[in-house]
Image 1 (spheres, one colour):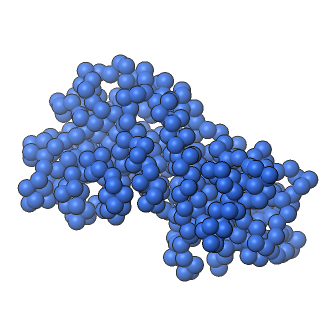
Image 2 (cartoon, helix red, strand yellow):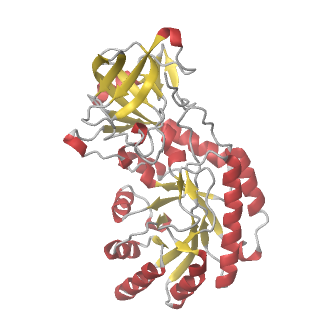
Length: 413
């Protein structure tokens, strides 16, 4: 038997049935008509945001990194509770506009922006997080041809990374942003060209569960921003401090303490150097805001024994939940939290009531495994299995066209 990760604290059961927004998951499946199915909860999105607002300084803006979940109803709801959107492609720009997001509240990062994407962002009034001197040159030329002033922040590749992060986005040689020594001359070029320099985007890493490391990284980020602003000689209008706040997925992982992080941030913002006194600050979060607010529901289509091991074959798989299969950035495969829709024990299942099973998807590849030797109550064909922490990097980050099984249904309730 291999342990699963912890259940998010936001889910309850009624008569052992998993509930979302006062409804059983089984009733939601019936309404949707079939599985596989992603279910996202407005209530949990609101709770996560409220907890974060309470913990962070009042003057700190909170942006949503829409790469985590770009389902239109989720975008439309997040627009009502966050201060800005961070996007990473022209396609995401289109989705954000369709969802009613104000372009002036968008910033656009990404190391490979094409000219057509730069033009689209400049026309819309989106802030470009410029990732290289040559991208700055292309932006300046396109803005001149359009007769429009581009809004530009400079993405900094800091000399440090975020310790304990799942994906390191700074420190050393990176494709993201510009090394610190390139920032000042590039900023001056943008300013001299008559375009609008808005500030910095400094993102060191993602998915960290190390509270102390997040605080240390934020402190270093403020130091770098102040030094670069002094070199440029102009106070930045805004600074995106990045994010990196993680959520627990796997056994023995525990949540970060956002109250401690917020208190440390309050201390820094209360003692800013003169060059940053009038600057607006924001953090950029995706997974932390939406990850625990979603579940992935998939039904058992077959049950078989092979060499003494029990396999449950489900109608979903890695084409919808690549990360849960262990094929999206993890070195060692571990089990996401998993449960049965009709038999949910918030405190975890007891061994004497359960069996050890391996849950696999419907794809013709051994990579398609959702649960490796996990403990679940006895299951039957037709039962619905739940994967938690599916609100981020599920539908938005999985190879849905692989083997032609099609998309999962998505619902926001």
